[in-house]
Length: 98
Image (tube, rainbow, N blue to C red; front, side, top):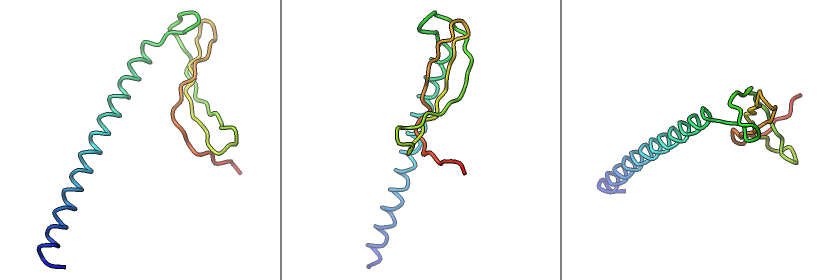
C-alpha cells in the first residue's frame, strides 16, 4: 500500500467516524423527542371507559406464546372504574429463572 492510499484510507475512516457520531446524535435527539411526546401524552391520560384521570401505575411482563421473548409493560389502572390500559415498554428476551 502506498502512502497516498494509506492517507486516503485514514481520511475515509475519520469521515466515517464523524458520520457515525452525527447519526448517533440524530438518533438520540429523535428518541428524546419521542420520549418527551410520550411523557406529555401520559400526563394528559384519561380513562377510555369513564374519563377518569387518576391511575395506579404498575409494571407487568407478558410472555410470548412460546416463551422466547417477553414484553415488559406499564399498566395504568383507573382508580375510578378499574379499567386497565396496557402500554408496551418494548421487547426483551426471556431468561427463565432457576
